[in-house]
Image (cartoon, rainbow, N blue to C red; front, top):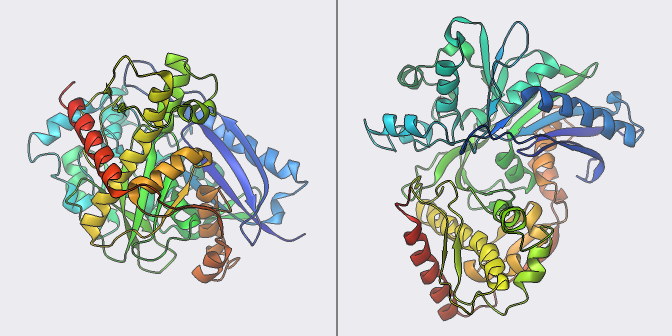
Length: 485
């Protein structure tokens, strides 16, 4: 049998294992959801043991579904929800607390405390990141301060990639893309920054070794090389074959995550974006990206379904939104836990603006969909300002890209073509690519470019005056959300 590449895709709501062939086609896959744990308002946790068990289960299920053996895999790659923080006992292998998920905001008081001395951007030059509850450093600090005896025990920290790899191979390793999301790695040295560890009160002994994104770390499943690690959004950038400066992708999921490749030099953002590592393939120099993270996009559709009950299934949103010809001047700013890029306003809260007696469920549904496109527009404009490179095409992936109304409106607001690739599993595919490159399954980036194909393109059809009016009203609505909390 032809050998394949496997990818573990450990996401915010589920774990998947997908097997790809040389052309990037999906051969087999399995998926299991895990619990979302909400101990208090603003707190979001996952059970690391449940995630570990689910990962092992989906590997087994996926291989069995295609009548494969582990030996049919040339390598395995890992991609993961990035900032989510796990702390476990290095001797027993047991977590000392549930994982603190990237969405968790319990460290907001710590954010304020550190921002008092130097401002929200005091660590941006070294890390590319503003002070925010989003990143791992303060989550780890909270665990060390709040788990009894944590600072006297032999504990290990990791983002989910490290936790999965440790359980598969016994190795305590992360890659540069995940390390760049901790706010503890220096973008210039690609190593843990002693000054940051001191400021945050983090002992280096708990931290994993930082490796490249594409190398053989160890073996699992009786001898299969584990050879690629990429944070989920960087994996999607690779899966979308965005390897040149100015090439960009947007992943539409629970939130939206847009990355623009910027080449071999990190570009500091002056417009509210994050500077992050795109990848480091083996011994080659690291490449960098600008990222705009949007907290609530697909989650807003879920909120309309679960909290308001105006739709029964998430897929119903498009039909309801299409029942009206436009948004009826209704705008929905989904700042449920503040706003991420490019605003970084923790004090913002959700706003539904422009309501009149004329407004209907259809207008609210349409405003909810359009909020995703408007937030993406804000990020695109910030990227173009920071980089000086116009985005000529936006490559899209994620669950919401099946929504034709949203994709057309996205193209209209950007005045740019929006392209959906033939392979929609771009995140897992990117992890597979990283692993496959490390073992010679693919020879180089040209092999990966050759695999990328277009399934659907949306082109702008909105006149400039209407686009400008919509953007202006959106900006007014966003400003109304500030200063609420």
